[in-house]
Length: 560
Image (cartoon, rainbow, N blue to C red; front, side, top):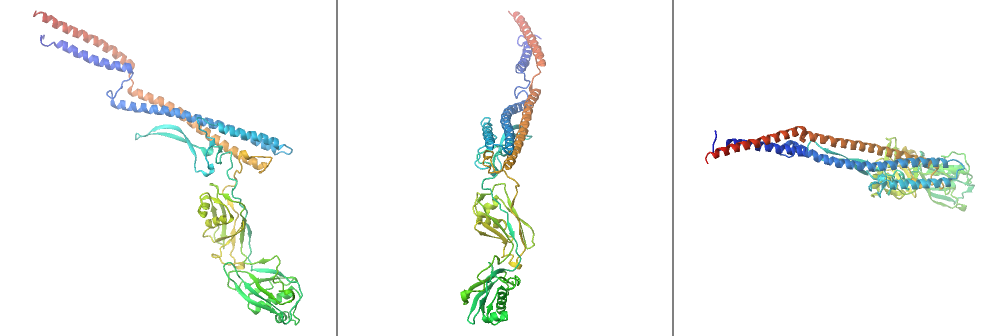
């Protein structure tokens, strides 16, 4: 049907042309960008995924750069540590040379000094971008620090919940630092110069009554008006006053004891008889025959420990004599033996002040009266708590005794201090009794939780002054060498891991790119073919529109 009002053919041709133009524009966009999904309007889901993954890839690229930086820092540290290993091997060789007889140690020391300077130079130069894993700036010793770490970037992770994070790998600087400002590095001593000097405990064990020897040089003659008076004190101790007996020795007692009438005391054997008679007359539980009756010049007197006191001692006090020359039968003099209040005692000497290192523990064993064997442990916290300080510093023997008392509280252990001497014994308030009444008591020597510690820096080694023996220097350098080898091994392992992570990250970036392409990239072969087809359709649509319009013109001419 032909109409002068409506050109249906032209309208159909125009509609076709518009549809072809729209498809052609879309295809041209895909060809020019290479993307099938370029905006959210193309495919919202694919566009969201691809945009997120492109963002992740940018982060992974940054991580890859950071991994390269971390690898460079680790590589420098590893190379420097490996150089230190070689230097310590040379150092050990020189020390072995110095051990030979006839070697000029001053010349060897010159070589050692050069090696020490080279070690310091290597450590100072092991820096990349201002980071040095071999040189520490901590004011405290590394041994006093719980941890000291650095880190390198290792990966970028998107969790299942959509959260993202950058993962880092730690570097234990306590195992890599060679020289630290406050000490504790691999090439530095593990303990300070005031490390506790633990003297062995000398154990003295006595289980017998209190007694003492006296010397008598006779003869001595008592006249009827002569007498000796004194107070006999038995079993006095730090926890008991003891019993006192007033004794008088006169001519009558002497004659009765010796069975004579001349009042003459000839020798120590006579003195024993006289003293025993005097003790018995006042019911004093003492023995004048403890040492036997063999010597004519010395005699031994002792307590019988039957006073009821926990002490075990014998004292002659307030001596007074009317004899010629003031003789008191030798009671005012004694030989080498004077044993009062005997009990098991352990003694040590406090030689110098010290600061308890962080990782050191001192211990010893105590067993009292057949009870359980208890181990007393003293560490840095024990010192601080016992003395109310924060620096774990022990200055005097009294302070060390306070630390031991604190650590051994409740065990029945007591200590006494005299100057620098410290004595260990059973606490009499818990285990009363001296002499034969004393409890069995065992205390071991001090020991530490470290059988050996490095006590000098590499810089301090001097074989000419020889503060330490060459054997000790060799042992110390070998210790440094093994720690350096361990450090190099750790750095090498970490460097290898970072290298693998870097390779994986680069592979991951490439595969994410590939995955994004599968979602949004256009098939250029398909799109180019479609472009040619659409261009042809566009030409045909234009021709159709032209024909439709020309037909309308022919009809219009009929009305002219």
